[in-house]
Length: 271
DNA sequence: ACTGGCTCCTGAGGGC
DNA sequence: TGCCCTCAGGAGCCAG
Image (cartoon, rainbow, N blue to C red; front, side):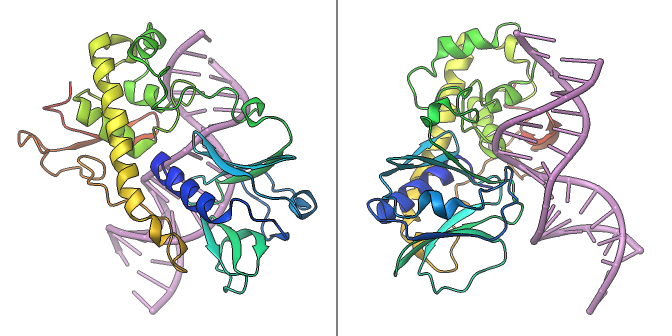
Protein backbone atom coordinates (compact mmCIF):
# COMPACT_ATOMS: atom_id res chain seq x y z
CA UNK A 1 0.00 0.00 0.00
CA UNK A 2 2.34 2.66 -1.19
CA UNK A 3 1.62 6.09 0.18
CA UNK A 4 3.30 9.24 -1.06
CA UNK A 5 6.64 8.66 0.72
CA UNK A 6 6.90 5.17 -0.73
CA UNK A 7 6.08 6.46 -4.21
CA UNK A 8 8.65 9.23 -3.90
CA UNK A 9 11.28 6.77 -2.71
CA UNK A 10 10.46 4.54 -5.65
CA UNK A 11 10.81 7.53 -7.96
CA UNK A 12 14.25 8.36 -6.63
CA UNK A 13 15.45 4.80 -6.87
CA UNK A 14 14.22 4.31 -10.41
CA UNK A 15 15.45 7.69 -11.61
CA UNK A 16 18.91 7.20 -10.17
CA UNK A 17 19.41 3.97 -12.04
CA UNK A 18 17.43 4.28 -15.26
CA UNK A 19 17.48 7.91 -16.43
CA UNK A 20 19.58 8.19 -19.57
CA UNK A 21 19.10 4.56 -20.52
CA UNK A 22 17.37 3.43 -23.69
CA UNK A 23 14.39 1.09 -23.78
CA UNK A 24 14.99 -2.00 -25.88
CA UNK A 25 11.59 -3.63 -25.50
CA UNK A 26 8.49 -4.16 -23.42
CA UNK A 27 6.64 -7.30 -22.42
CA UNK A 28 3.06 -6.99 -21.24
CA UNK A 29 1.97 -10.07 -19.31
CA UNK A 30 -1.37 -9.22 -17.79
CA UNK A 31 -2.68 -5.95 -19.24
CA UNK A 32 -5.72 -5.87 -16.97
CA UNK A 33 -4.89 -3.12 -14.53
CA UNK A 34 -7.14 -0.26 -13.43
CA UNK A 35 -7.03 0.78 -17.06
CA UNK A 36 -5.91 -1.71 -19.70
CA UNK A 37 -2.21 -1.52 -20.54
CA UNK A 38 -1.61 -0.93 -24.26
CA UNK A 39 -0.62 -4.28 -25.71
CA UNK A 40 1.66 -2.58 -28.24
CA UNK A 41 3.47 -0.53 -25.60
CA UNK A 42 6.69 -1.98 -27.00
CA UNK A 43 6.09 -0.15 -30.29
CA UNK A 44 5.60 3.10 -28.44
CA UNK A 45 8.56 2.83 -26.07
CA UNK A 46 11.26 0.90 -27.88
CA UNK A 47 14.27 3.01 -28.72
CA UNK A 48 13.29 5.87 -26.41
CA UNK A 49 15.70 7.34 -23.88
CA UNK A 50 14.29 7.87 -20.39
CA UNK A 51 14.69 11.60 -19.81
CA UNK A 52 13.42 11.89 -16.23
CA UNK A 53 11.18 10.27 -13.65
CA UNK A 54 8.88 12.80 -12.04
CA UNK A 55 6.00 12.50 -9.65
CA UNK A 56 2.63 14.18 -9.38
CA UNK A 57 0.55 12.99 -6.44
CA UNK A 58 1.09 9.24 -6.37
CA UNK A 59 1.50 9.10 -10.13
CA UNK A 60 5.00 8.42 -11.42
CA UNK A 61 5.76 10.17 -14.69
CA UNK A 62 8.33 8.52 -16.93
CA UNK A 63 9.29 11.28 -19.33
CA UNK A 64 10.44 10.69 -22.89
CA UNK A 65 10.86 13.23 -25.63
CA UNK A 66 7.77 11.86 -27.38
CA UNK A 67 5.49 11.59 -24.36
CA UNK A 68 5.00 10.32 -20.82
CA UNK A 69 4.32 6.94 -19.29
CA UNK A 70 2.04 7.48 -16.30
CA UNK A 71 2.38 4.78 -13.64
CA UNK A 72 0.33 4.36 -10.47
CA UNK A 73 1.09 1.65 -7.93
CA UNK A 74 -2.46 1.34 -6.64
CA UNK A 75 -2.33 -0.28 -3.26
CA UNK A 76 -0.23 -3.35 -3.89
CA UNK A 77 1.99 -2.26 -6.75
CA UNK A 78 5.76 -2.02 -6.77
CA UNK A 79 8.54 -1.42 -9.25
CA UNK A 80 11.73 -3.39 -9.20
CA UNK A 81 14.89 -3.16 -11.22
CA UNK A 82 16.35 -6.54 -12.05
CA UNK A 83 18.52 -8.15 -14.65
CA UNK A 84 16.33 -9.47 -17.48
CA UNK A 85 17.19 -13.08 -16.68
CA UNK A 86 15.74 -12.82 -13.17
CA UNK A 87 12.91 -15.30 -12.71
CA UNK A 88 9.47 -13.77 -13.10
CA UNK A 89 7.30 -13.76 -10.04
CA UNK A 90 3.58 -14.19 -9.90
CA UNK A 91 1.90 -10.82 -10.57
CA UNK A 92 4.83 -9.36 -12.52
CA UNK A 93 2.52 -7.81 -15.11
CA UNK A 94 4.75 -5.57 -17.20
CA UNK A 95 8.48 -5.61 -17.90
CA UNK A 96 10.31 -2.74 -19.56
CA UNK A 97 13.69 -3.87 -20.89
CA UNK A 98 16.56 -1.44 -20.99
CA UNK A 99 19.90 -3.22 -21.39
CA UNK A 100 21.62 -6.45 -20.40
CA UNK A 101 21.70 -5.43 -16.74
CA UNK A 102 18.54 -3.40 -16.32
CA UNK A 103 14.90 -4.29 -16.60
CA UNK A 104 12.03 -2.55 -14.84
CA UNK A 105 9.29 -4.83 -13.57
CA UNK A 106 5.83 -3.76 -12.49
CA UNK A 107 4.43 -6.10 -9.87
CA UNK A 108 0.87 -5.70 -8.58
CA UNK A 109 -1.13 -8.56 -7.05
CA UNK A 110 -4.37 -6.60 -6.69
CA UNK A 111 -4.08 -4.79 -9.99
CA UNK A 112 -5.37 -1.45 -8.75
CA UNK A 113 -2.33 0.08 -10.38
CA UNK A 114 -2.12 1.63 -13.79
CA UNK A 115 0.27 2.23 -16.66
CA UNK A 116 -0.85 4.54 -19.46
CA UNK A 117 0.89 6.42 -22.22
CA UNK A 118 0.15 10.02 -23.08
CA UNK A 119 1.65 12.38 -25.62
CA UNK A 120 0.06 15.42 -24.02
CA UNK A 121 1.69 17.28 -21.15
CA UNK A 122 0.87 15.07 -18.16
CA UNK A 123 -0.66 18.03 -16.32
CA UNK A 124 -3.42 17.99 -18.93
CA UNK A 125 -4.16 14.31 -18.61
CA UNK A 126 -7.59 13.51 -17.13
CA UNK A 127 -5.98 11.56 -14.30
CA UNK A 128 -3.84 14.52 -13.32
CA UNK A 129 -5.62 17.71 -14.26
CA UNK A 130 -8.04 17.91 -11.35
CA UNK A 131 -5.51 17.19 -8.66
CA UNK A 132 -4.96 19.61 -5.81
CA UNK A 133 -1.59 20.90 -4.59
CA UNK A 134 1.27 18.78 -3.37
CA UNK A 135 1.55 18.73 0.44
CA UNK A 136 4.75 20.79 0.38
CA UNK A 137 3.62 23.26 -2.25
CA UNK A 138 3.28 26.83 -0.94
CA UNK A 139 -0.24 26.91 -2.36
CA UNK A 140 -1.20 24.28 0.21
CA UNK A 141 -1.62 27.06 2.76
CA UNK A 142 -3.71 27.68 5.83
CA UNK A 143 -5.90 30.18 3.99
CA UNK A 144 -6.39 27.80 1.07
CA UNK A 145 -7.38 24.87 3.24
CA UNK A 146 -9.61 26.95 5.49
CA UNK A 147 -11.43 28.50 2.54
CA UNK A 148 -11.94 25.18 0.79
CA UNK A 149 -13.44 23.80 3.99
CA UNK A 150 -16.07 26.53 4.38
CA UNK A 151 -19.52 24.97 4.53
CA UNK A 152 -18.23 21.44 4.17
CA UNK A 153 -19.85 18.86 6.42
CA UNK A 154 -17.56 16.04 5.38
CA UNK A 155 -15.30 14.53 8.06
CA UNK A 156 -11.96 16.28 8.11
CA UNK A 157 -10.20 12.97 7.57
CA UNK A 158 -12.07 12.40 4.30
CA UNK A 159 -11.48 16.05 3.42
CA UNK A 160 -7.69 15.84 3.63
CA UNK A 161 -7.76 12.53 1.75
CA UNK A 162 -9.59 14.15 -1.18
CA UNK A 163 -7.04 14.51 -3.96
CA UNK A 164 -8.78 17.62 -5.26
CA UNK A 165 -7.99 19.33 -1.95
CA UNK A 166 -4.45 18.04 -1.44
CA UNK A 167 -2.73 15.02 -2.93
CA UNK A 168 -0.75 12.30 -1.29
CA UNK A 169 -2.50 11.94 2.06
CA UNK A 170 -3.47 8.28 2.19
CA UNK A 171 -5.48 6.45 4.78
CA UNK A 172 -2.64 5.61 7.12
CA UNK A 173 -0.98 9.01 7.18
CA UNK A 174 -4.36 10.77 7.41
CA UNK A 175 -4.96 9.07 10.75
CA UNK A 176 -1.40 9.75 11.86
CA UNK A 177 -1.49 13.41 10.81
CA UNK A 178 -4.75 14.14 12.61
CA UNK A 179 -3.46 12.45 15.73
CA UNK A 180 -0.41 14.62 15.65
CA UNK A 181 -2.57 17.70 15.10
CA UNK A 182 -4.89 16.56 17.91
CA UNK A 183 -7.93 16.90 15.68
CA UNK A 184 -10.73 14.34 15.80
CA UNK A 185 -10.97 12.64 12.38
CA UNK A 186 -14.76 12.80 12.35
CA UNK A 187 -14.99 16.53 12.96
CA UNK A 188 -16.76 18.37 10.15
CA UNK A 189 -14.22 20.06 7.87
CA UNK A 190 -16.23 23.29 7.96
CA UNK A 191 -16.11 23.47 11.74
CA UNK A 192 -12.37 23.70 12.18
CA UNK A 193 -10.63 26.99 12.88
CA UNK A 194 -8.00 28.60 10.72
CA UNK A 195 -5.42 28.02 13.46
CA UNK A 196 -6.20 24.35 13.63
CA UNK A 197 -5.83 24.07 9.86
CA UNK A 198 -2.37 25.56 10.22
CA UNK A 199 -1.62 22.80 12.71
CA UNK A 200 -3.03 20.16 10.40
CA UNK A 201 -0.82 21.35 7.54
CA UNK A 202 2.24 21.19 9.78
CA UNK A 203 1.29 17.71 10.92
CA UNK A 204 0.72 16.41 7.39
CA UNK A 205 4.06 17.78 6.25
CA UNK A 206 5.88 16.38 9.28
CA UNK A 207 4.35 12.91 9.07
CA UNK A 208 4.95 12.57 5.34
CA UNK A 209 8.41 14.07 5.69
CA UNK A 210 9.44 11.69 8.43
CA UNK A 211 8.20 8.72 6.45
CA UNK A 212 10.19 9.97 3.50
CA UNK A 213 13.30 10.25 5.67
CA UNK A 214 12.90 6.65 6.76
CA UNK A 215 12.36 5.67 3.13
CA UNK A 216 15.56 7.36 2.12
CA UNK A 217 17.50 5.10 4.43
CA UNK A 218 16.05 2.00 2.77
CA UNK A 219 16.76 3.23 -0.74
CA UNK A 220 19.86 1.11 -1.04
CA UNK A 221 17.61 -1.94 -0.74
CA UNK A 222 15.89 -0.95 -3.93
CA UNK A 223 17.80 -3.42 -6.05
CA UNK A 224 17.52 -6.36 -3.75
CA UNK A 225 16.13 -9.19 -5.82
CA UNK A 226 13.41 -10.09 -3.39
CA UNK A 227 13.03 -6.65 -1.86
CA UNK A 228 9.92 -4.61 -2.26
CA UNK A 229 10.43 -0.91 -1.75
CA UNK A 230 8.00 -1.90 0.94
CA UNK A 231 6.38 -0.29 3.85
CA UNK A 232 8.41 2.00 5.93
CA UNK A 233 8.98 1.17 9.54
CA UNK A 234 7.82 4.61 10.54
CA UNK A 235 6.54 4.52 14.07
CA UNK A 236 2.78 4.65 13.69
CA UNK A 237 1.12 6.18 16.73
CA UNK A 238 -2.50 5.25 16.09
CA UNK A 239 -2.95 3.39 12.81
CA UNK A 240 -3.64 -0.29 13.43
CA UNK A 241 -3.43 0.17 17.19
CA UNK A 242 -7.07 -0.05 18.26
CA UNK A 243 -7.36 -0.96 21.94
CA UNK A 244 -3.81 0.02 22.74
CA UNK A 245 -3.06 3.01 24.97
CA UNK A 246 -2.45 6.32 23.24
CA UNK A 247 0.92 7.91 23.86
CA UNK A 248 -0.92 10.54 25.92
CA UNK A 249 -1.56 7.77 28.42
CA UNK A 250 -5.13 8.86 29.08
CA UNK A 251 -7.21 6.69 26.74
CA UNK A 252 -7.24 3.68 24.48
CA UNK A 253 -7.05 4.17 20.74
CA UNK A 254 -10.35 3.69 18.95
CA UNK A 255 -11.16 2.47 15.47
CA UNK A 256 -14.03 3.84 13.46
CA UNK A 257 -15.00 3.63 9.81
CA UNK A 258 -15.07 7.08 8.24
CA UNK A 259 -15.88 7.40 4.56
CA UNK A 260 -15.60 3.62 4.13
CA UNK A 261 -12.08 3.75 5.48
CA UNK A 262 -10.78 2.35 8.72
CA UNK A 263 -9.69 5.21 10.94
CA UNK A 264 -7.84 5.35 14.24
CA UNK A 265 -7.81 8.08 16.87
CA UNK A 266 -7.48 8.85 20.54
CA UNK A 267 -10.78 10.04 22.03
CA UNK A 268 -8.93 11.95 24.73
CA UNK A 269 -6.33 13.99 22.93
CA UNK A 270 -8.13 14.45 19.61
CA UNK A 271 -11.12 16.81 19.60
C1' DA B 1 -21.95 21.51 -5.29
C1' DC B 2 -21.62 17.87 -1.95
C1' DT B 3 -21.88 13.48 -0.03
C1' DG B 4 -21.86 8.74 0.62
C1' DG B 5 -21.65 4.33 -1.47
C1' DC B 6 -19.87 1.13 -4.89
C1' DT B 7 -16.32 -0.94 -7.62
C1' DC B 8 -12.12 -3.14 -9.30
C1' DC B 9 -8.77 -7.44 -7.10
C1' DT B 10 -6.14 -10.76 -4.30
C1' DG B 11 -4.05 -12.23 -0.06
C1' DA B 12 -4.22 -12.46 4.83
C1' DG B 13 -6.31 -13.90 8.81
C1' DG B 14 -9.99 -15.78 11.67
C1' DG B 15 -13.35 -19.37 12.75
C1' DC B 16 -14.65 -23.95 12.65
C1' DT C 1 -5.25 -29.46 7.10
C1' DG C 2 -8.45 -27.07 4.67
C1' DC C 3 -12.36 -24.50 3.53
C1' DC C 4 -15.12 -20.40 3.69
C1' DC C 5 -15.93 -15.89 5.06
C1' DT C 6 -14.62 -11.09 5.83
C1' DC C 7 -11.70 -7.42 5.48
C1' DA C 8 -8.30 -4.19 3.61
C1' DG C 9 -7.46 -0.31 0.47
C1' DG C 10 -6.56 4.19 -4.04
C1' DA C 11 -9.33 6.62 -6.34
C1' DG C 12 -12.62 7.04 -10.13
C1' DC C 13 -17.38 6.96 -10.77
C1' DC C 14 -22.30 7.46 -9.96
C1' DA C 15 -26.70 8.43 -7.90
C1' DG C 16 -29.31 11.14 -4.82
